[in-house]
Image (cartoon, rainbow, N blue to C red; front, side):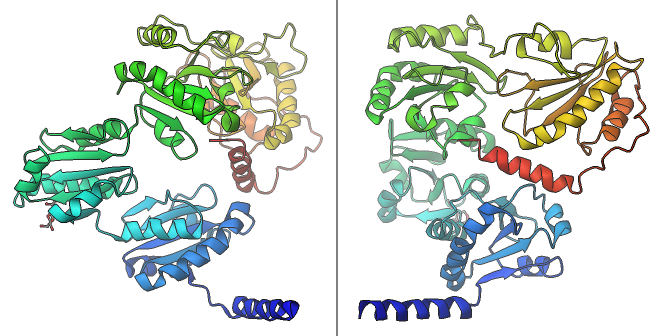
Length: 502
Ligand SMILES: *[C@@H]1O[C@H](CO)[C@@H](O)[C@H](O)[C@H]1NC(C)=O
């Protein structure tokens, strides 16, 4: 009986799958623009058939499309293998890329979740007006409708303030909820005058008031500072925000929620003193303990404290053998703030001898080798786990040998550095990253973006180095370059992604 019922259910389910018409619209270069222009709100996915994240997203995306079709919110997809030009035109660099279109010239990255209900609620929010008109009756509920909401109190005829606020709401609608009140009595009851903005939040002091003249930049800064908890939490959802905040981040690593809460309380006065200058946040050391290594902390001793100066990419770990107390951390942060504490530099030891044709650079020898003003230095930033770096290695060795045997052996250096074990001043977006630091012009390194072949490297050094140093490749036929460099770099990005825990 039971089995029979199951079978019937299975058959029905299969039939549904087979007959289901997709509610996701497939677009091509011929249909894309028309479709975007004739729908007010479209979420478009740019995907590649071989991409695993795209496959995982597909059923969720289908389900969301079906839920949203009655709300005239359209979900579309573009196959970037078939439609390479279209994807390039839209600046697609990795898969899947999701973008929200309100016509062709109003495009925003999709920053929501990748589950069906998450996609649905994100897009419904997108379809609502950026600013909700509020009354005395609707205000109270609105204040707590999200973790952070911004309400503008402005006169109905104050066009300038209205425009500034509305434009900002459109820009930041994914981040905060926005409302507007035109009733002077309601403003008075809230203790503010026209025009003002009150930011209501579910943490810390509960609300903050902006009462200066409405100016987009000033409001943006006000919201950024006010919406950041005094001691927040670093996690997958907040990490990007902290990284782009433009101020240093002080990490409090602890393994249990209770420890994190206690340390947050302990360090609150320090956080208060540096509010708007240094962000303070706890981080779960059980799940993200390996991240401690990125800030030059040991990854096996918690709780721990460290400051990351994000702009300069400098790391200031607090001595892990010491206890974390308010007094000691306050002194440490004061020292950091006044420039009295030196940044820690992670470095492998300087090799006593160079074994291979490629010169091995470490953080402590970076200046002496890479910034040697008399030499053209080609340097590869690699990671030990990076497959494309391994594939490059024999060619890179060959390149180094050719220069070592040439007349340029004292003028051109082919070097590499393990960028996961050494702090380098360069911002590394993916592995491998290869740059030429020309002699006499060390402030202007040139990033290599060509094919990873010996010929092309030589051309690059010839073209961009001070010594225009070209070398001959011996006559015997060398292997041809890989077929698809662009696909290779996409995979490199994808494999890098899986190593980025936050
Ligand atoms: C801004 O102006 C629009 C159009 O006049 C109006 O509908 C809206 O309620 C105003 N918003 C606020 C917050 O006053």
